Length: 174
Figure 1: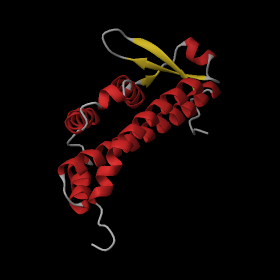
Figure 2: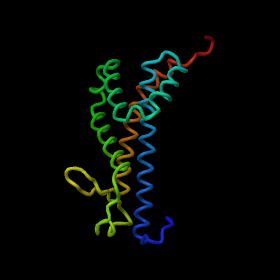
Figure 3: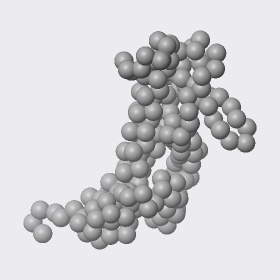
């Protein structure tokens, strides 16, 4: 329970649901982002130690945004696997969804209108501020769909990164 005597029970419920949704989505995107780091580092480095340093010092910092890493991945994967986007036809659309939803949960405020209060047991509404201010709802089913899209993208990136990372590892007998 959230300790704030000024919150109604409905708002406490909305806050708790929001914390859950935000945490789950941002956590999954963090794992996806780390797989982008692994792919990019293993592309540029010839040893596991250098790849780790590159992933941690350069990519793991705030110097390169998630969007920057995504663009770099897109460029590198096309160089190594020109058919990647033909094989993974939904990848760009899915990554756009990942980026949009991650940014929504990281940067938008909870909506406090009547509909948000009425649906407090099942939904969270976010206030989206841009050229056209609007509200967007989320429920368990929608969040699970978003999480599945994130995992789908992460699995595709992992499939591309794993052989590269494994090739950098020292082998027994060498």
